[in-house]
Figure 1 (cartoon, rainbow, N blue to C red):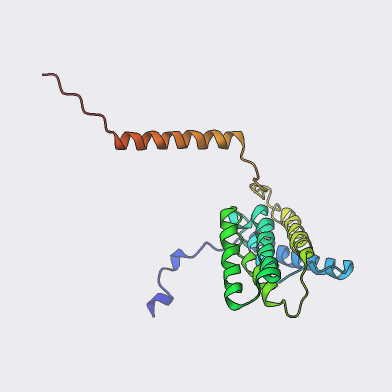
Figure 2: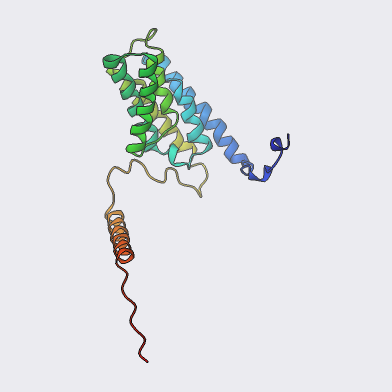
Length: 207
């Protein structure tokens, strides 16, 4: 039973009071706004995966998984895959499982991994018998709800004056500096490989 108590020093440090307060305010305000928008506009603005998105946005906001790019594109990709499978492939158990795997793979490929988005695909496919889904689902609640949570996070996560959130937004185009760094890194790597494959003969010592 020692594994239950061993190596407690590996646990993260205790959260500060302001971090706990930010989690409380952010999670509450984020979901409250989505519910109010749903109630007063008559348009669905909330879905279950947004609860998990709030965990990332307000508890581990500096994780790459909680960046605006990941939140918005992750949910959009997952919802799109779910709708494609629902309309053109079906909802067999294999199709549902493959749809989730495909969503994860696409998020990985497009560099916008967002764990809660895996549930977005499931929401579409597992509730299709009781809920009607059309392509408008991509706009409401997926895109609109994601943007609303980002706006809340932009306010709440910048309560600390010494922290800036987000570190980057959508990163759709690499900057010239990034291209320059990557080019030189690739060139240096190729030169190292050439040298490793064609070692220069050591010059004889002159007696």
